[in-house]
Image (cartoon, rainbow, N blue to C red; front, side, top):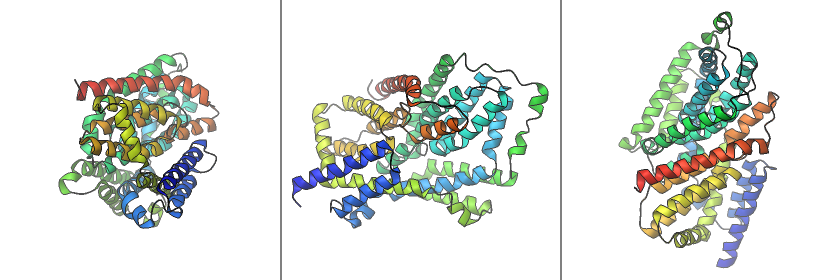
Length: 427
């Protein structure tokens, strides 16, 4: 096929696929698989290269292992118990409850991934707010923000981080050391702003002693032995992520080992455990990897890299801030997963052309893609999950209403990230 024709055909396939994903009229997994399939049918990528070079099985294995492990922790009732504990500790006060649930969401997003944390915390929140008769909207908006911000702290927290860590061969502890400080600062500031915005919407009566005594945290735990064992395996798995590079093991090996240990020690039916793997998500990633592989093969990524280097005149500091702002604003309006998949090979080519190995470019991409997901309702998966749960509870949070509150906060978090990157890597 003519080289120029191949170039424009690849761009066309990618653009059409990307637009259909953004419009959300067709399931995004179907869009990604069809787009990836078209790259193969149109001979932009061979099946052999797709399997051996472009599909990142480390990312897929990491996600699958954590899905199984977290589902086993969930079955024990641990997360329901945490929600009841939050009610007792807050004594029904809306402001205290918002702080506690936001903190649980942020920490949970870092440790178990933002999507799972959202799936667990959202239904609990609506139940709790119904119990103490307050509007769940301020708390749920805070939880959306905390899911995306908190998940940025660790490699396993947000899908963009999983992809970046695997593609750039970055270790678990590198994410913790480089991103956790700015995540902690941003979380505290974001919670303060939300409390300020909704200070008149969180008034609630304090629960009486009789009502507090009626809340039995232990009653939510279905199987105490299973909870202890599954949490122990989760802790061991996280420790494995910390030290895995010392033994030349990939993160997927650690995650799958944790999943197998949890199945064995908690005596879970393997068939039931495997049902907890979200094949929809894994197939979406597979299609996406092939799609971006087509861009690489056609030379589109290299062209963009050259133009990017020319634009910033080879200045890595300027490049860092351009990546941060571009990633942040773009991820607010398009899903941050396909955007990150496109940016990873672009940054790799930029580094190769300039002969540098600057990890701060990866931290810039991570902060932009993850924080940027807070800008609109469609920016990241936790947004859709939590807002849909709010709607079930009779609270309709429109696209405009969400954006009016969250987009300015998102821009502020990008400014904080820019200041952090400047002070840490360039001052």
